[in-house]
Length: 250
View 1 (cartoon, rainbow, N blue to C red):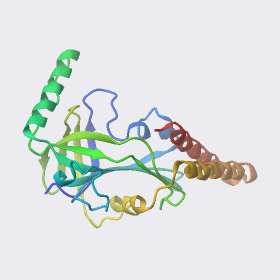
View 2 (view 1 turned 60 degrees about the vertical axis):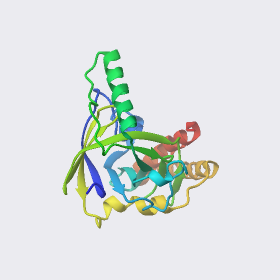
View 3 (view 1 turned 180 degrees about the vertical axis):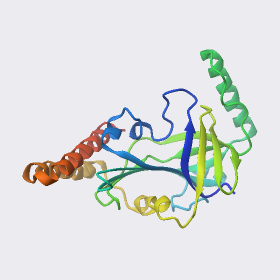
View 4 (view 1 turned 90 degrees about the vertical axis):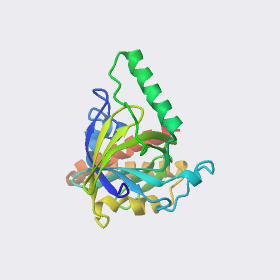
């Protein structure tokens, strides 16, 4: 019953000001949110190898019980500009010893900082999701820009409740609470990430050339046509932000 497509419905951060869903892309005071609107956020749990991507390490390939796919969908100008950030990872169950270690580390951190330990006990449904580098797709179909950007990452997530409508999760190191709403498997919007992830990503150098072209086109449109000024400036600004992230990311 855990497997399925889910929208992120609510988040209760363990600390005020934390932004566990989306990071810099969805932070209200961040540059991205000054230009883009968060259209939707998802966390899908799928059977092993549903995306066609095999586990990246042979050390845990046999132990993966599913795939986790996090999606942040952003847009501007009523959908004219679309940007998707996709994180695909493999879900690896934690052993009893690993869960105990997470619990002890969380309790120790809370005690050192004089805070309430919000992690508490972890259930047998706790997994570590080992994510590939984020995939950035610019454009509705990812044809304008599609590249892997940033480092690999991992998170620990426990499922404290699940039925045919909702799934409740808890961060295994932070204690952040999540509520996910189950979606129909044939819904169009929750599946928009599939062809984006299936596209072959660009090399970093080629991505910068594409972004430079988009930036130039946006500026040119804004200067030549007053009616297209807002769209041109917005497109140029988004291209500049993404280009900066590409340049300074690992």
